Length: 319
Image (tube, rainbow, N blue to C red; front, side, top):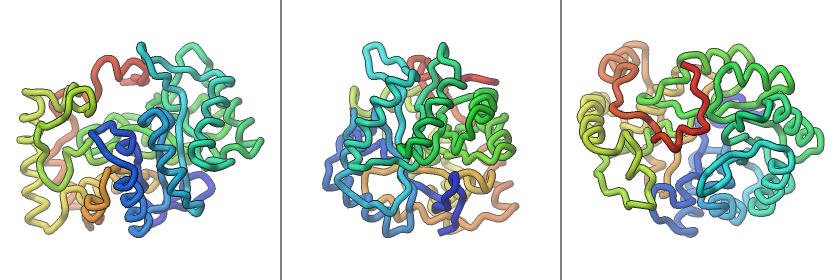
């Protein structure tokens, strides 16, 4: 697998997002999750991303039981489960969450530690200072920010260098192209792209609207609610036809498009099952292919916002 730089390490150009192990997209079980992690390792994936909020620790526990030490591991803190859901970025909370995560992960160190969401009334310089102390203490290898504006990244990076910024980025979520990708490149910060397959919309087969209410958060997500859901399926259908004509898998082409947007971008698709990993073989796209994809799926084609109002509460908006 192609290698890309993440802080002072080289990792595979594609990582693995473990949110679904916590049941965010429907029921799963530990045995299936462990088999999925084994398949990811066999596929050459070496960067694994989780968070304390995924299943309220379940995702971290599974990775801890998996037990591989030769992988690059990232986790996050900052979101406080509700109701109401809120965020905390104070040093006491960050340290407490880190110790809890390390216990679940069965580690004394994590390679990358993110602030999952920014607390607006805590100066980002203070947060960067906390993370710097954790690096110096050997608790974390580097730190990251998630869903922040380029201006926030600049302020944090000036206080202590940021390793990575995580943001949703895919064919139908392109906000990072309006400043974040460029700022990350300028500052030599990796951009870790979560949901690069559109939460299943760019999966092997067209999605069916069979989301379990109260379990799968897509059930109330604007892009997956009618009439937006059907409109998005129709918009993506010509892209599926293009993939079939060119011999690409749909996920492989979607991942290739993300990778082509910058050599500092590392997508982290997720899945609950080993079976879906076979579809992640990255398509070989040339300039003509990229142009064809952009004609079929131009920026802004998606129907509906990527999050509902409650989920957008602590996402920084800059455009």
